[in-house]
Length: 416
Image 1 (cartoon, rainbow, N blue to C red):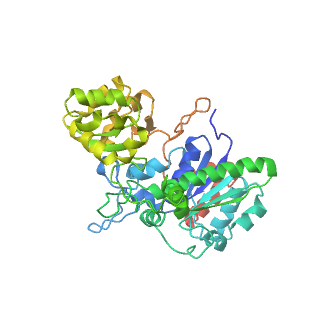
Image 2 (tube, helix red, strand yellow):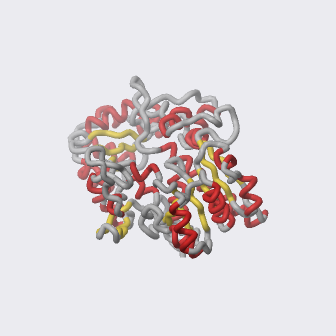
Image 3 (tube, rainbow, N blue to C red):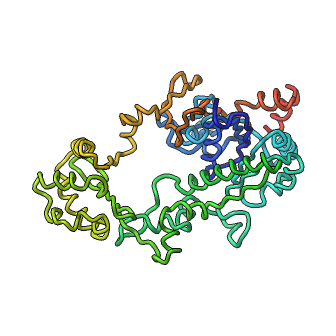
């Protein structure tokens, strides 16, 4: 049993909303990813398996011949990550026949998630008003740079632009240096998580009101709501937040360099044990002063405190420092590079990574696990990402009742 078993989700997102649909699929919903016949653009974004790029449909500039178009050419790890547990079909929404098929699919769906520019679906005859007539229970979730209304609604954006206008970049970096873009696609992910939450709330509301609704998600607003303390501090009259380097805004944590890596200091927990440990190494300086026993004093003088602890930690290895901290019940943490996570004993003990079979490749691939741990309805990857158009016959034939001749005609016309 899975958390979202029985729900049908149509995925019309690009990279802005792919995480939203992935969350639904990995929680058990039947997610159908709809791609144009030439394939989603993310299939051509690396990194690629074994550093061999996706080559479907490209033409060699030197030999003027079609390169490999077998499933072995579908190798984008980025596409794979964002499209687990989904079925995949192709559909050209710019053709009337494609729009008609989309309406038939929407009539049988619970949710349609999309990330096109405002007004795009309406121009295709697939706007919320039209879809609501077809299926009053449908929840339409739209993820766009600035929402469906307002002065910026028609502006284009990117993950970096959304991070900047949402306040995330301004607060990331060191005080006297330029702001930094956050690692990964934080704006896209923030918007996707807010969209997933809003969609689930709309589905719960549907149970009581008996109808769906339109969930309008702005990436810029999602980022502004995901920067922890920044907005609350401003509204409480505490000013505009500045960059703090690796010092956490609470001032109780800071990253330090050890002999062979990095850890995060913590001035909470058993302060006496920490001071005695540092004192035993003759590095305590003034930390033995009784003033440091006060939590607020440690917060107000965090820079000096962590400078002392940095000087102490630099002679330890990460493993030595972590073992000593755990023994003394001090909440330190390792700051590990991404490549080290695969061998992390904690993640492996919790079964975070999933081995997913790719039969067309004749191999199994390790995938990152889910952000949520359910006990009764566990998160899991139900299937590897779909090949291009892999489920056309299954969806159009078996579920919409189109015959083989009709499918062939649609394929020849470039509709599917």
